[in-house]
Image 1 (cartoon, rainbow, N blue to C red):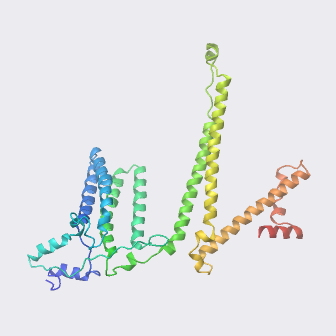
Image 2: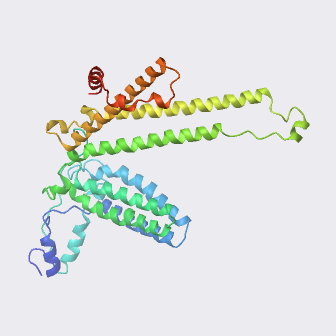
Image 3: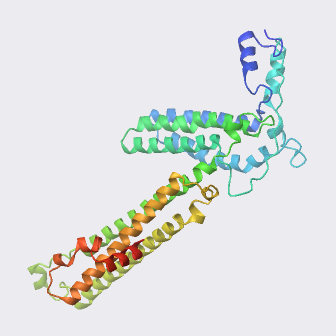
Length: 376
């Protein structure tokens, strides 16, 4: 039995070996309620789903995902207050101030175990000013785990592996969430514990990558909208009208489409085409605007400008911009050559109107000088 903690030898040495053995968070009834409901309802839902029940998992998910989430979200601001903020709502402040570990230590003291010496005071939260919250290792771990587990569950669900998806959901929604919640309680410690996990800001390294990732994602989404709109538009316009049989023609003029019905169909085709055209133009305009914002010096690499050295990201961006510009101007020169040749001799075939060699590499000195000045 150790003299510092009063616990048996293995447990006392383990507690004293902890890096932050002088500070531990309070286990209040509010936090204990969050842990127990997360573990209990999540495990019950996973077991009920595994047994094939349909009503019980939906009921538990509605209770845990809607009712309890709203209740914990509304009352969570009282848990973030300091120990001195107990004047308001004193009739229920014990839920957020009472440390349940004190009852455990008092119970263990009756069996000869002394309470270990540590503090539980939490620092006051200061509103973060600047461009945004700090990108710490703890927050990155939480974000990446949610994304990875969510994609894994979606993939397994689409592949028809409901059992694997159920236990992946239990691992993320119950076990991993409880672990991250317990680790997050150390974020407001007063002894500066684990600064590499809670204090160091890595936004300088992740902000350009995050902006590039958002740009790529939105770009792919916009092009998906454009392609799907064009495909849907073609299907809508190629919808053949039903053939009128000879029996319908003999039935009378009401069975045969009249001129007004034909005009109505053409008007619908024009309206559908106009709507799809406006949608495609709007999506393309958003894509052009995002590209301009992405490649601007002030918005994309603001923090990289502090270091004037040619970083790989800036070199790659400049190389891509120069390549795109060169290709664009060369296409313009090709188009001018083609149109000039067409005006001089309209009988020239289309294939002969593309002087690729002389357009890409002009022969005369004057044209070479104009080409280099316009392109570079």
